[in-house]
Length: 395
Image (cartoon, rainbow, N blue to C red; front, side):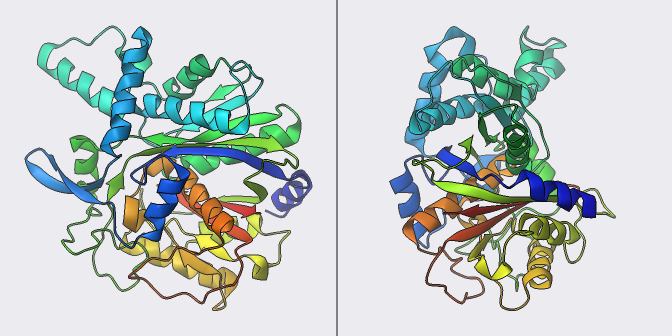
């Protein structure tokens, strides 16, 4: 660990700028609309029927779904693509436009997903069970690498294209990977993020089988960061979000990446996390190794709404920062858990709070001690198997 920290200290001497960010989620896609939704105490979670049973979910607004279908029809090759890919194309187009990049520029792409093409996979598998056959394009359109490769096809970039799955910390792992490429000099620009379209009967059945899905009929079905809850309350949401990263300081920077941290827990069960989230303790300390802990104003928690997930992360924060910790928040009570995209959605929330110098609290959770300025925000994410990432952002 000491050698890892020493190496990282050298590689993070140069800031990395986030010069653009684009997202599609239950919050919408326009930054003003997204911020407006954050200012409301109302959840965006509703119900939808799956296999004759109503389940809590957070869905993309109808008007944006029309755009997704328009993209599908815009090119014959896009007709067979999964929604995770179409979402990625839409947000990637917007992000590079916002950053002033052009199609054909030299930049890398790393967009991941926890589940990948789950909608398409389930559709084709059902067809196989019924007929014993699959459509010709089943394999290429259901592979995980499908996401970045199709974005690269659409943007005509000159650079590496990478997809991966590290479950719920996928998007932040994409940031880690891009940082390594940029700091090494192997790339000057990188498009990173995650995409998830998990609202399928099979995916929700899996969460119910794990006994972590919400049955709470109250005003807030997902009690993310409610440390007094007695039942698991995770809810799924759909989203895609990407950011443009560039080495050094830039006039159009939305924020800067000042620190990165990562760690993996020693687990006793496939989905478990240690009681005091040792992985988060390590990842947060690594991300903050060159920063006075008192300078961190906010932590955007992973806080999935599960009993063990929420409390263990909170304990890790107390162990790391003490009782005088930064303000704590999360967005999963509002938009559900967007799996592989959630880390980048958290980065977006952090940037919006810094830009507006306004803290967004969880309406039913522990009241926070407010700070006058929001200059530095730490973002957490962790996936099944305890794969934690922490990213420190500054203005």
